[in-house]
Length: 109
Image (tube, rainbow, N blue to C red; front, top):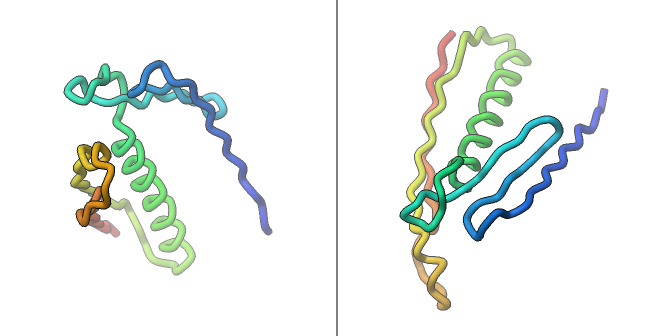
């Protein structure tokens, strides 16, 4: 059975750091903290990205465990990111990682 799920996200910017987003009946604000020029009214873009990654890993991990017949009570997912947002200010190519992620999984069965 092959079903395609389509997802549409629409957003309007309130400022250079804040955007109001909507997808279906869900709404979300993404904003930067005050020290980055934002109003801190929602998660940062990187936090939103890591939230989504953790959600996808949870769904995928549970699906794989079920398909393999493995008992899975719950998972704990920790994602840490190191980000240097000031690299965007430079015009030249910089030999430095913009975002570095560390993932940890804890499986409870």
